[in-house]
Image (tube, rainbow, N blue to C red; front, side, top):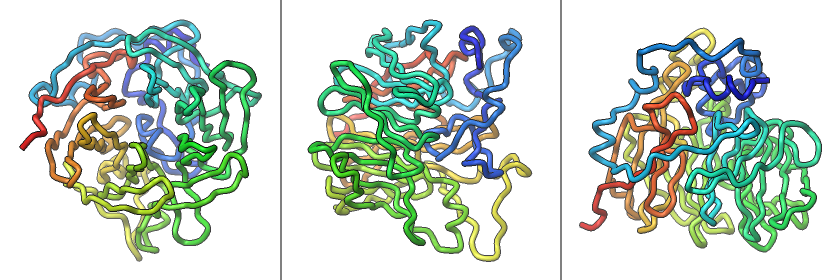
Length: 383
């Protein structure tokens, strides 16, 4: 178990924390934990003897970011530092918005959820490492429920935990999706679950689940890859969805398309994405699957969609990445509702969350992952 001091000083690249997909010999960058259905490799739990040695050289992560291009596109309005304690450290946060001026940081490697105000102050710690009530082994995402509570999806335990807004005992429900990545409240005791369900040869990534009955009412967003490429595609199970009124916007890691659904799961449309980098081609019939253990650059050939957000004016933000060994390069794409590109920016800092017109970026100038840049896009969406 990492000590607070070592966690505070571990480098942002997390180079010792490659992730492994369900025990398969397929490693991925530790920064992609929310995108790929992954569990932490044992290397992440190895004891550390002390902080990394001091150096005057800038960290490698800075070289992956074009700060001149970032400053051309965005205006930093706040340099945010998240409060840390011996109990709450920022290590590898998977961020969602609370809707009440709060940020929910699921920390998969720490086994807990830290709730912050947008001023960086720590408000609450949800859960802790373990397998008992209110505990987690790998909490991948946390979301606010409509009644003000918190719901957490634990990938490794395959269960969903509900924490009431008023406190009290949490409710634990075994997930109907073994690889559950997140649960978002749709209202009327129905939840949008993210995770792969494969009843046959067409895996679906999104599911409408009734908490009351325990049934999955509908599964949708199939991977849609040729059968000969399915085995490789299953290594990239990450999907991201965001709710906007009655609309679900969704992306899948290896699809260069933004999908639009209603809250029943009916497809309303799709937008081809003008990718900042080409997606790459999955191996087909007769082609060998790249071995990431043998080929350090095997994953570098694929662009993976990471998330989708909606701005206050209705424009859409899509983030994507390519791995670079144990690190990554991140791209930001902003579109209008018709799919017209408003910004295509490669080599940006990692975008952690979007709220209204504010973009929360990881600060590439700091090796500490609790240092963020809060920025506004300079672009004018009006024609």
